[in-house]
Amino acid sequence: MEDNRTYILDLSYAELKAFFTGLGEPAFRADQLLGWIYRKHAATFAEMTDLSIALRQKLEETSVISTLTLVEERVSGDAKTRKALFRLCDGNTIETAYMAYSAHPGETAEAGATRERGTVCVSSQVGCAIKCPFCATGQQGFTRNLTPGEIIEQALYYARILAPAGVKADNKTRPPVNNVVFMGMGEPLANYDNVVSAVGMLNFPRGMGLSTRQITISTSGLAREIRRLADDAIHVELAVSLHAATDALRNSLVPVNRTVPLSELMLACRYFIMKTGRRPTFEWALFRGINDSPIQVEALVKLIGGLNAHVNIIAGNITSSQDFPPAGEKQVKAFKEALESRGVFATIRGARGQEIEAGCGQLRSRYVTGVKTGGEPI
Image 1 (cartoon, rainbow, N blue to C red):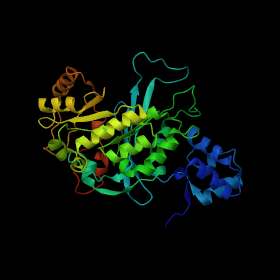
Image 2 (cartoon, one colour):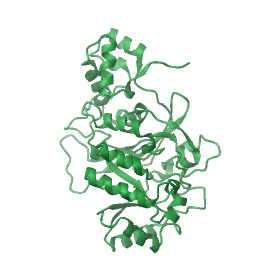
Image 3 (cartoon, rainbow, N blue to C red):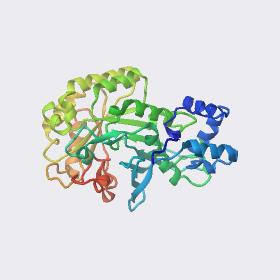
Image 4 (cartoon, one colour):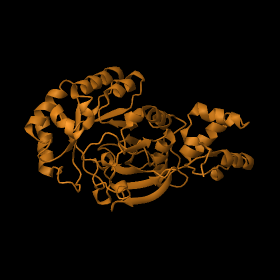
């Protein structure tokens, strides 16, 4: 049976105020509701005890907070990496990952705060149309875009289950979720409007209250939409899944390159820097014998020259395919040193959650027939 109730998390602040006035309630009820959802992590209207019983009943009849149902969750041995598979209201499934990181060296914790950073990696689509051959999500094909609420709810899930009881996400405590990265299933910029709407509520002070520096959008290289982000003044962090520095190789690793070649992509990246003052991070999943050669190093140095850019290197995930063997530790280190010797700032990002299949699309592949285990690294 179709549920025609309003999905609260899909609404902007203005729309939520209009929703309440439509119920014959004052607009300030929107602030109360947002406080319960984003500060007190309420998942039901019944928890909102400062709302009258009559209003809570009215909200139950007309709206819904949550539409995601947990199908399976896996937790790493050290409990610092989690991977959840959710079923949407239409029966489709998506993945979400959570990663806890220690604070940067020298960072001091505020009184009552932990020193860990909590990052949620959200999906933006059911499946993906980019079809990168080394990624399980790409092998699943594309089904549909996620709504803003379906994106936001992924972050809220971990905010709810990991928050200490009664702890508010204010300046005196460090909330369990303080970074959101759009690096899960799908190409975020192919779902531009819904992703930007979700970013708006993640950034909104009455919403999750994250700064734009705590939100990262990853893209396979949609140049037009990168320019649109800049023109719309969406000053989030931008990560570009590069993986190759020549068109010939990138055409096979990241098929969108066949229509948006590197020359066009780099012009868009330079435009983004000029308009926002933010420099993209270039992601490089390293595969042995494929994109780890000196030729690729030299091409990458030339490609991003003058950008003062940051290259994030990670060994490709182990997959059932023999076509994309992950680079070993020595190869990753050598690639980094080769870039640094030529003046390119590079870091090595350690693979997380391999024992729980945390790579993009890996867990969902267990529920989708005809898809190999694999996934873009997280």
